Image (cartoon, rainbow, N blue to C red; front, side, top):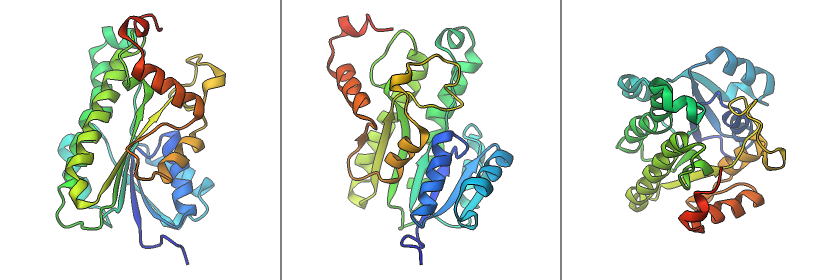
Length: 244
């Protein structure tokens, strides 16, 4: 008998490397997972190949940017979720994004507008008293504006602030809200960016922070990244302006 056999996790953006690792870990803890993504073929292959009990995972189609379809998607879910994880991601280089509005806009839609659209539907569902937790995958890039990634960072900052307000909104209902403020993750999205190897974190490590999230709102996985987080938070603007 699984210890969490009656609990359902809705994982939005389930084809990311962190989300895939989270599927594996949630299943090992006994949860049933509704894994939602645009790329169903790749996701199904992962579930069949890497999840200990694939029967506990239901693969669904979800497009974070299809705002008009979000309510129909939610209402068609086979089960109402106890935990919802928003892990959808999209990245464009900052210089490219400055000259490519569509690329910049896609980051805004995936990281912020899409999250607000679907999560507003989730938390205002009066027919789901079993909702226990909302978890969002954000980034250290959203802590302070920096010249190398301020467009991507601004979308993550907006997402983090949305979750912070949602935490207050849901407090009386006892629904916990967490934001995972992650550093560099070894993933298909960061492949080829030449990021410092000493600071790279594995998707499974970030996924564990998601699955084991407690009551704290801001969760920063990794000791080095906790230090960087507080340096960014507390440094005066004249020092931050010198960062890459």
